[in-house]
Image 1 (spheres, rainbow, N blue to C red):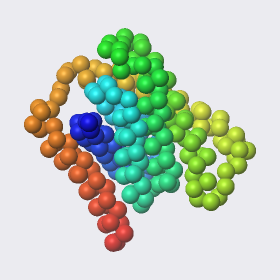
Image 2: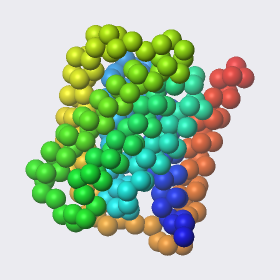
Image 3: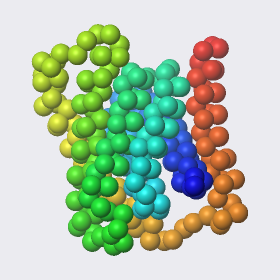
Image 4: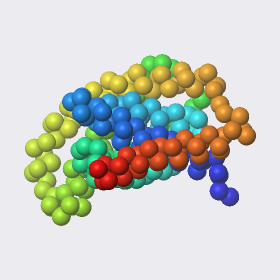
Length: 217
């Protein structure tokens, strides 16, 4: 039987992540800030952690990444390589899912602050670096440019170093999400679907609307 709440959760969290990547990420890039690190460390890790501790079901973050990546793909006019971004987002969702499922975190109701911070560092670093490396492999293949291992090796130290900022942000982000979850803020049953559907539609409407506006102008 299909879990409608599970599907609705995937769509709303994925839409929020995709919206953040397309709109907020664009402003960060325009301001010459480390958009990739900030978006992954704050929004990607934050939303995926919140969804995981709320639903505690494997597979959800993979779905969230697919939704967010699809929304990023529909918004190619807001800076950067949109194919790279879409791939990175989808891979990040899968890696987060893999890490939390592998560590069997869904069965652990409480984690100490130290473990939460350590989890933030490890998860954020591996998710960001893993997504970054994957884009360096898949993007050339999809663009017919061809992938060469030597090109990846040249940039590997830079990629590994760039993950340190994300790990630092994650060490704060994940404990913060756990604290928020402890407040037990939840939508009433009758409001769950109207609110989640409304937020999802609004995110897609704004992003695609902006894309069409750019094309029109």
